[in-house]
Image (cartoon, rainbow, N blue to C red; front, side, top):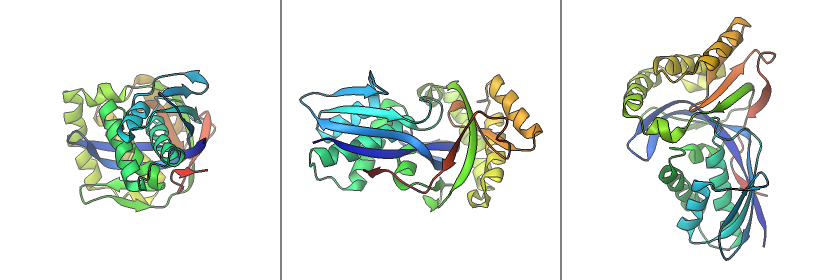
Length: 260
């Protein structure tokens, strides 16, 4: 039996890795993400946007759930650019295969299995928790908080920055931890996207994560009267108030992952 599930993408604006399997920070879900169709099969075969592919966290979550499957992943936003596509595909796969194979896992177990698969693959430290709930999610060290969020966001995606490489760079992580904790201590994520993007841009600049072309385009958005920042982690500029400068649009969404 074929089962299809949708999961929103997600954008992290500030992050502080905490141990090897979790992080502090601020993220929100976006309406564009991944749609996954699963069919039980004797062995796992993955297709990404119509092409045979290997997606490590998706294969990983199927192993954790003990079920091979034929998985077809369709994406709405560029892959590897800070939109959490790997997490969206992994969580949608877990939801779909659980229904298709009648595995009987509850949602909490599926989210946890998806998170562990992402951590094991080095592709994310918490995207699936945002994609599970939708909206705005943050943790400043006082526990996970959640608020609804719906807003238009413009973006331009130049390309990817390897999350695995950043998470494996000890000097970069020390800078991220120091600056991120300082920024989070004074930030109220519920004040709106413009203040959040301002704080995020300061964080990105101070942690030396900003490529030159991202820096230039953010400057153009600011010169046009908007506010912009960089997705963590990807060569993607997100902005509010200057749609004419950036190439595409999406929306923050309060909708979490679901079966069709």
